Length: 504
Image (cartoon, rainbow, N blue to C red; front, side):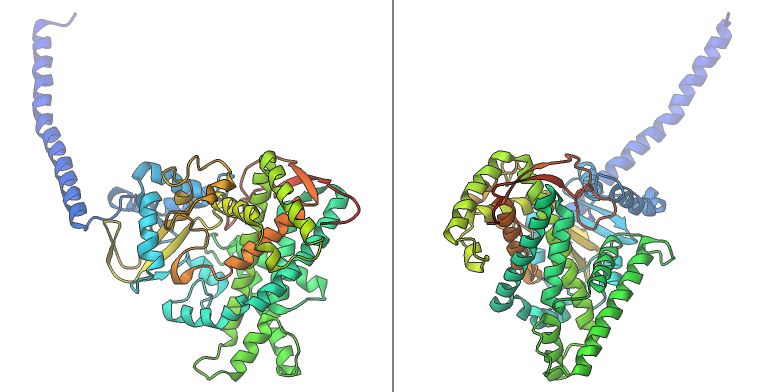
């Protein structure tokens, strides 16, 4: 048993320890309070950076954020899980480091406010900027990567692609291609929507940009290379054989070589004698006739042909896939839309679809918009600060990248009632400003948005007026390493023909 003297000694030691620890504890609390007060003062003055894990004790873990981002993108959850997790931790504005660059994410109401001030207003101290891997793969002259002045010039150069006559011709070509594809798939009773959509959108876009391609092997190689480039966009920038980024760079090189051979052949045959009316021919003639200041270089043409193929094919095919899935999961809406579209089909007597026909498809267009809202193929729109500035009440340093998060807007219950419900009728009402950012805003709004709507409407009309479908696989896991969120299984469906004599 412990003696009385020993117990007294232990008591004195315990008391002494607490006396010694008390100042440290008080000092610690005081330090935290001072930090909190200082942070509050900085926020009021607009000098505080957004919250996030890149300062102080976690400087050594900067690479961990990139690894976490890549881990989410290589899982079935997709890279947006990374953003969502940090928004829950830090709020509607946070910063992180990805691929060696500081990124600031703005979500929900902050994102809507930023859409007006950063995207629509297009201030000169902010420029569009994707991660470096995108610029390496698409090229420094790509519309997605150029500076303000160069972007305006390139936009003027490619604007002719989206004029009325080329758009009408594109609609006719896409209608022809999707009708043939659905006939083939209908014979088997099954289809993988992503595969069908990727194939048809690729063929239609290539026909518009570089003309019909008779060599099936060359077209197949081009399509494979485009997919390799796309899959490398969010890879670690490691230029070693065997890595996804290296495969993407090699694929870009093959695409550039193939397009250069095409340009050389056309020039050797005489540009003015060549009767092709595809977009490449238009650009080459324009560059041949323009002043040196306005003429496009071959590198500018090549980078933007690749950009337009990827922007026109991959994003639209992904949106089509989600649209078919949403309707497969909502059979009542599918039947409602089918009844409307069959009535429209009877009025144009199974003729090829025209832009005039598409303009009458009001409910189908609302279905397209709701599919685009829920899918949000482009999750955020980046801008790089060219100088120190203030955004959303926070101090943003030069070279930081500000991401206006569109997905958080599209799923904000303050804007959309029950936002996880697929409901095309929500577009019966006028939309709040900057609440629908599918194609961006301001001078960098997607040039091809009308082509995307055309492809989605035609695909939807031809599918829904000729087949009923149900999901063959309900797995919602996302494809690994995809630049845009899409289903890993490609959305397989079982098809039941509505009539067997001919297609609507």
